[in-house]
Image 1 (spheres, rainbow, N blue to C red):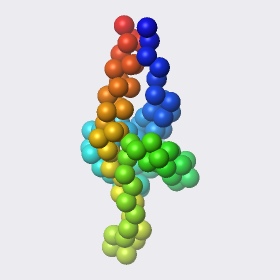
Image 2 (cartoon, rainbow, N blue to C red):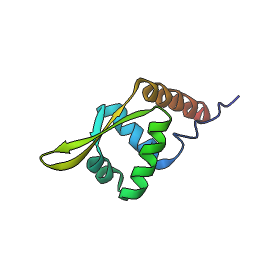
Image 3 (tube, helix red, strand yellow):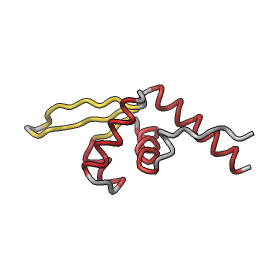
Image 4 (cartoon, rainbow, N blue to C red):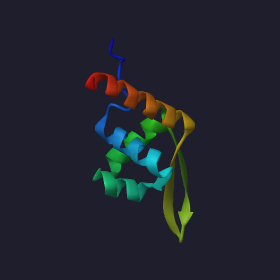
Length: 93
């Protein structure tokens, strides 16, 4: 029996964000925007959804007098990603 895929992670952009954060631990908004090729608005919306699910933490502040948004994966986000990967592997068997 196939496991249901996590709808939060099944979005291409959200999966890209979480995949990157699982490997790096943390990043910032501008870097995520660059590596995902997303627009600021779309990235912002998707980060909010991931934050609401508890998969990431977002910290806003200033760095060198410029606004800075730091994004970090949570333990819950890592667990959700691992479950998602396991579910996908079942589909590939």
